[in-house]
Length: 562
Image 1 (tube, rainbow, N blue to C red):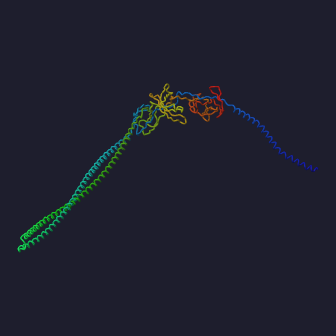
Image 2 (image 1 turned 90 degrees about the vertical axis):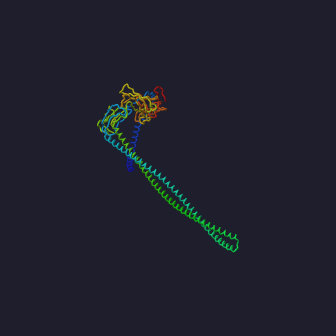
Image 3 (image 1 turned 90 degrees about the horizontal axis):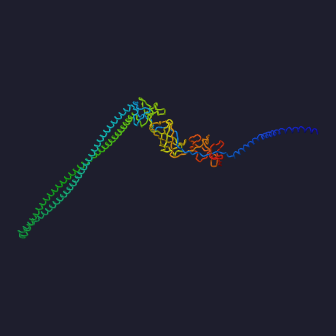
């Protein structure tokens, strides 16, 4: 059994050595846990105490003193201002030259139109002379062009008269042509009538010749019958009476032949007369035809002459239009020359520098002999040390009436109107109160300052008010204005700007941004941000936060209000 016992001892010893490294970390953790518990207990206790105090603080509502802003009637709005002249300008030169005469100096009182200085400008005088010569030449050119225009008008009128006369000639030639044509027609009608008469006479002659032949045949028969009856009478075959009848018949036939011959002679004469009439009418026709041709030539010649005259009239009209254009161009040149002359005369008139209005010379920038050019800039010579213009020849200001421009707060936009009275006082003029009126208002607010610009005119007949003076302006509002004032202790100024603590209807704190006006020491004017019925905290604590519930005490009573 010893061997077993000996073998077991080393194993037991080995088991004890293995448990010790496991227990050691557990012990260390337990020690650290105890230490943490011991250190955390005081802090937990302190936190509990703080939470309890915070709970008590939250449950405790702070007391604050509140009041409404003061409504103070505004007796007059007082504002600072700078006095300015009613009119002020710089007198510049309009011509170039050398200053030859100087009549005024700083402080001189001048009237409108008064000569202040004279500039010697020989170049301008020479330009005036040259412009006047060019104007005279232009006038002469216009006169010559007008004379040429009159001549052209006369030529046109003469050409038109010749056209009218030639038109009469053409009409007369056409009338003559018509007359000759009528005569030709008449001659042709006479010719036809003559030829008809000739034909009739020839027919008559033929008839007479046929009658003569018939009469001669009857005569031959009667002569043969008579000879036969005479022979028979001698033989006694016929009676004397029958023989006498044949003899009578013979005589009758002889008379008929004689008469027929006479008729033939008459008919031949008629034919000859008709032939002569035909020849005469043909000659008349030829003459009338010649007259017609001559008349036609006359008409053509008259029309050709008329056309030539009409072309001449058109040419005269074109010449007249050209002449009128030349006259207008010369008149335009004359107008331009006159304008140029007037310009140089005006520039020469600028050699005398005159005052634009009544006033006082506030600066003189030139001396006699100075070279003057438009926009001359030299050293300023002024009657006082106030800034004066440094450009131009002179500075002038009208000071019998002065003006001030002031920026009026928004609260007075309905109270300060044109016509409102204003008084001006200057510290350097004690005992003097100057009265003026508001003449204009911008009726537009500056978004930065919440003010609007107002201009006031003040009579200054004695010249006591000098431009550039600092003055106090008191404006009497057109209607009563009230201003809001709060104690200076109610103001809170921090990184968020100027504010006041206002009590809301549910008794909570609200920080209202405001803009302040004038500072009266213990109280300050509030120009915007508050209403008259707002309740403000008089002495707000630093512990107050937005929306905090408070108990308010009216500054005029000891009662508490929830």
